[in-house]
Length: 380
Image 1 (tube, rainbow, N blue to C red):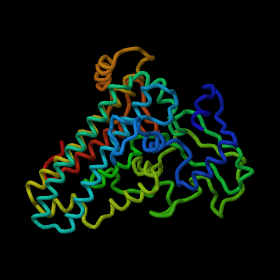
Image 2 (cartoon, helix red, strand yellow):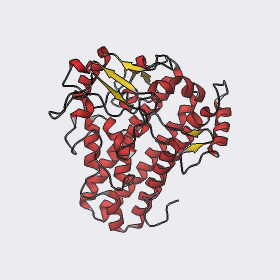
Image 3 (cartoon, rainbow, N blue to C red):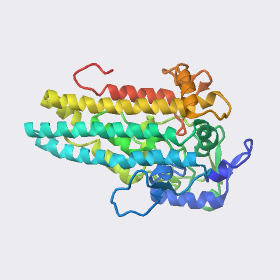
């Protein structure tokens, strides 16, 4: 569908024909996912081994992509940078599990073990930031922004409505109500780190637009009508820049595989959350280790802002060039000073992520919320 839509002339109306609309919506009902490319499509399900290996954990240098829009090595490196982060994050998930086991004990020995686990988590998160920044070694910023990124755009981040045709012959199907493109905010690993460390991005979280209850998906959002649905038009239109109904990070969970959504729901509702238990124990070494993990997650988000400045903010100010990455980084640093971090605007106007959000404002808010999780001291 994305190949078809983004191959149309820039001034053409986006009308998705029935041979694409109907099977796609039928599949999305089964997967409980919206009919648009997601982070899972680009990253989680888009890698294989270059060379077969008996090792249970893939070597991070032994990865290749399965599907590309452009065929360019820059695009492959962009996806693989995120895939390496996800694979390295397996260790973080193991640390979380071991920590939660100790939290049920809650004694002095458990505090010592959790302290060690959190210091290990700091090293993992710092590795995630290093892997994120390493995308600069194989992906040119201008190539990414002007040639690769446009293929990701969903209706929420574009300027034209998407019309889904063929629904008149399928009364059980209905058009989706919003379509964001793939976003790093759809990484369940980063959501898991937030939930584990007690980072609060949504003080009053609302249910996702694709869920009518914590465990029951609302199928009408995935393309199938409820029994109360009345007669419809023979096509459905999804408007660009759909106003968010819920906080962005909460909404992005609906774009994750449903088992990931269930895991995050569980992690957010454990009876003994880490942050509260660290505060209750009052152990100085444990509190220091917890704050170190929070600081590491903030550093990761600082690295993300640097990548956004390099790959989105700076290229948005000029036409494609052949500048080397070092020169592009210098330009990105200059453009960072032009960002109004309170509104998400630059000298060129509002920047939107592929997920449709106000990019800079969202990233700065996520970083600030991370700092606020620190215990016993003013957040930096």
